[in-house]
Structures are given as structure tokens and as C-alpha cells.
Length: 528
Image 1 (cartoon, one colour):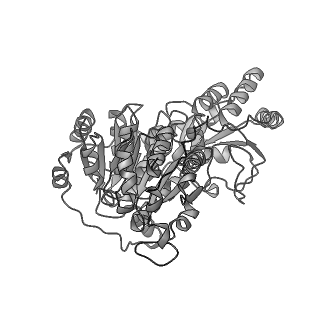
Image 2 (spheres, one colour; image 1 turned 180 degrees about the vertical axis):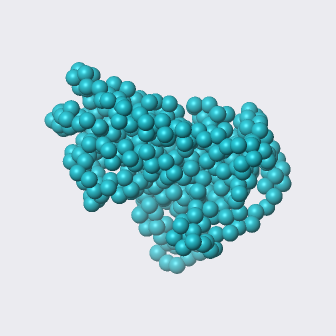
Image 3 (cartoon, rainbow, N blue to C red; image 1 turned 60 degrees about the vertical axis):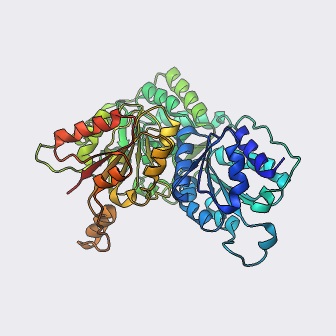
């Protein structure tokens, strides 16, 4: 068959439903093969948006999202979103076109060393320089992207190879590689640490969400009464309704989670990822015992040198520890952290007066009230992300999507498309005016493919997080001011509903109306 047909049949065999991308001359054969397949090709307005869509698809489903760009600038435009997926441990397969093999040994139009460029930002990548390696390469790209810890892979597809013939057939996907069961001796030592502790605490990271360990972690904390502080990407692993939840690390205006960590005499990190959250921010150099429970050994780090590392399937480890603790009937006294939790919740639920201006922090309780527990909030990067991470109560895993590995601006609007296609729930894409205009063109993509989610846009005419840090360091800010279009007119130009509430009672009404519709909508929240 034609090599591009083979590649698409391999994608179908991997269960791919969507390919997000921008068409190019060098991907012509591949595009027409996609047209004749069961896969939906979603043309987007910028390759970065395509990569962010594949990224969020991977985080929400656990199956690699697929993005497509052509050679040269098409491939370079994918880089940020691919790197973001790799550091956020989101499974993603990127495919790029390339010129014919006969011209790649010399300087030629739009030709770059794309495989070399993608090397540092992927788990694995290669050039498909022979049609007979396509089947193996697609299988490897998905296998590597999806096994723990997941990330990005990349395949370069030269145009002359795409148009050639091959007798190769697709490889059958196999059951996904599973992590090993926990070592019994290490489990016993972990249990001994727990039995000796008075004030143990759990730090739940992205890995606890990603590996479906949340259910087991919830059983463990309910059995033992051990409190949990989550990383930004671990939000929802334990419900913030749980009396054991201390919300998130690095809690900004309320430091109770940090206080609890300093009071703890044993810390269990579950799926904790140093790329997401620097341990120097919470480990103050005490002699507290740390047990690292994850799919990979801990990074060598002077601020994070665990006493014990339990490298295994997280769910199995937590299930075993729950059984051991239940048999020993060990239940920890919750009074040492219960007041800290109460202070956090009182702070998060602060009710502004009718004359107070909108702030991200005070808007979040209103948003939480109108969203269901299973609804998905995708946060862009900026000062609003910090408030969402610290103050948006999250009740289920994968319902508050925050990029905190690479932490790239511009993810939420395209990410909303992927989320709306992937989940049967309402989706809200929260963003600031800085990140919004980086990928606002994808609103057209969203309306074209029939998406219906809400964009929550905080506007302050500024790169606010940078201004905050500059003022904290220097007492003033520079280079951060912006001007903006009339966002209600912009919404109208895209054919979507726009809301700009001016009072608190208008805010809740606008949010409820926006979430109630199956159409795209934009709610602008002017900040002072």
C-alpha cells in the first residue's frame, strides 16, 4: 500500500480519533490518507495550538494525542507545545513533514534538522526514511509516549517516503506496559516508618493523578487519617471536600500547608515530580523522614534525598499499605492539622462585599459554585494560575488542568478544544489577557468543529505575574504593560456569545448562562 496509508492505518490501530494540525505541501499524501480514514483531522490556526490540543488530550485520556505540522516553520511552531507535554508528562506523538531525502544532505528550502531539534524535548524521535519501518516506528512512538513516565515522541515523514509503496502491515498494539508490583521488604520498611510516626503527611503529585492511583490514595487517607497537600498538577487526587485535604503546596497567602509540612515527622511523596515543584520550596532542610513512592527513582537533589524509595505501581503500593495499616488499626490523630485545614477553607471562601472590585481570588468561589464536580477547568499560565492552583477547590482527578512543568502561556484556549472533545462535562478555559491573545485564533477552530466551552478571561492590561515579581524585587515594574481590543467585539466577530459583568450579581448570572449553553462563550472579568 501507499506509505502514508500505512501510517494512517497504524494510527487507527493505536485508537487515534483526532489529529490536530496545520496542512503543508510536504504532508499532502498523509492528509489525503487521513481524509479516507476513520480519524478526524482537525485543521487548526497555529501549530502551537495543535500541540497544546494533543497535550491536553493526552493528560485527560492517558492516550497519546497526535499533532501534525509540515517541515521548517511548521515543525518549529510545534516545539513549545511538544516540550510542554514532555515536561508535564503528557503522552503526545508529533508528526512533521520533510522534504525529499534526495535534498536533505545539502542546504535547501525550509529544510532544518528537525530530528536533532526535537531530541532534547522528546522521549524518543526518529525520521521515517524507509516505508518499511513505519509500522515499527508508529508502535514504538505510542508505546514510549504512553508508558510511565509518559511524554512526547516525534516522527519525521519525508514527502518522497510518504508517496512510496510498501508491503509492510501495521503491528498490533499490545497491552500497555505495567509497572512492577512493590517490593515486599520496602513495603514493610515503609509500614514501619508509618507505625513510628506521629504526624505523617502526604504530598500528592501529578503521577498520582496520571496513574489512576487517586482511588487507592483516597482509601489510604480515609483509613489512616493522614493529611494530603497536592502539587498544582496533583489537584483533585484527594477531594478538597475530604477532611484530610490541605489543598496545595506553596499556598501563597495562606501558609498552613507549609506549616503542616514543617510540623510533620514523616512525608510520603506519591507521584511527586521535581520538574513541577522545586523541593527546596517545601523541604526546609529538617531531618524529617521522606519516603518516595513513584514510577521512577528520585532525581538527585540536595533538597530532596529520600530515606526510602519505593519504585513500583503506585496503586498497588497504596493498596498494600492501606491493608497493612488497616490490619494494625493505626489511625492518626487529626487534631494536629484540622485547625490548619479550617483556616485554609475560611480563607478560600472569603466573601467580598458588593462594592469590592473583581479579583481572581474572589471570583473563584463563584466559579466553583456554578461548576459541577466533574466539570473541567483548564488554566492558562499567569498570575491567575497561581490563584487557581491555591484557591480553586477541586473534587475529582483531572478536573483542574494546570501546566506546571514547562508552564507555557497560551495553552488554555486550544486545550479547551481537546477537553471538550474528550470529556462529557462542561469545560472552562481560564486565561489572562496575555496568554489569551497568544492563541485566541483557535476560537475559530472551536466553532468550526462544533465545540461548546466557556472562556473565562481575566483582563488587567498587563503581564501581571511578571509585574508582581518585579514590584516585589524592585518596587516597580517595567515592560509588562499591554493594550487590548474590545473583547466583546472580538467575541462577536467569532460568532460567540460575550459577557462582561460589572457587578457581583451579574457575575454569577453570566457564568451560569455561559455554562448552560452548548455553544462557545467568552466571559470577560475586568480586574483592577
